[in-house]
Length: 208
Image 1 (spheres, rainbow, N blue to C red):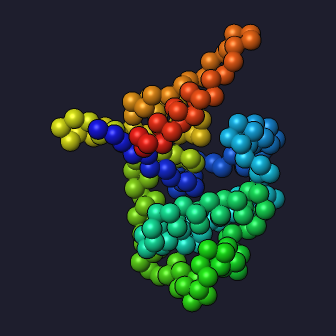
Image 2 (cartoon, rainbow, N blue to C red):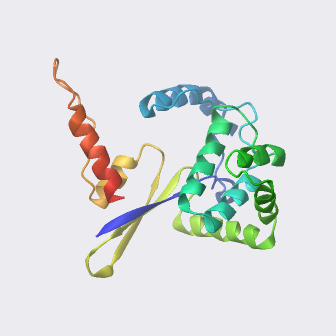
Image 3 (tube, rainbow, N blue to C red):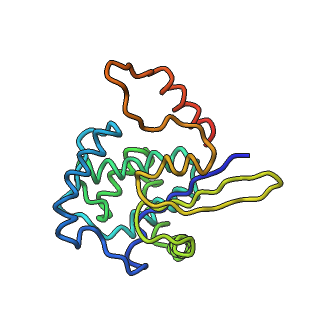
């Protein structure tokens, strides 16, 4: 047995949902949540750029092409670099020239970078992204991040449930049957067992 977690991002407009950045109260609240999340997850220097939200079709097409044409490690590295560029360095990756610069940091061959950019504009890649968006909508996606989690059961059966939000991982792990250490308030003077925490984290990675 086991399972998998599929993550979907930027599925808002097609559902009729509104971006949090169109609601003044949520815009005012966002810096608090971003600061807290950065501290909790150990992320340094992240914040929303002034141009956010932006049209993300091109970077999504680029990433989709890389995901289907290169090893998963390459896709993950490029995707992470896009996030860092956007939320740490405030680089607008909706602009082709900025994407070229980001790709050049990963692909030393200039022709390969050009090939990726050209592929992102083909009918095939555009259709792939449209199909992926439709798949996400059928699964119930209405915002980001949205997760479709599949649990493999005995006899080859599969159980699938949707999860929404970056603070739902403990629910996902429970659904998958992954043992984790849940949040609890320690007694005064009680020490954190860092060794056990690390062991649990490694166990979660191994199971996913």
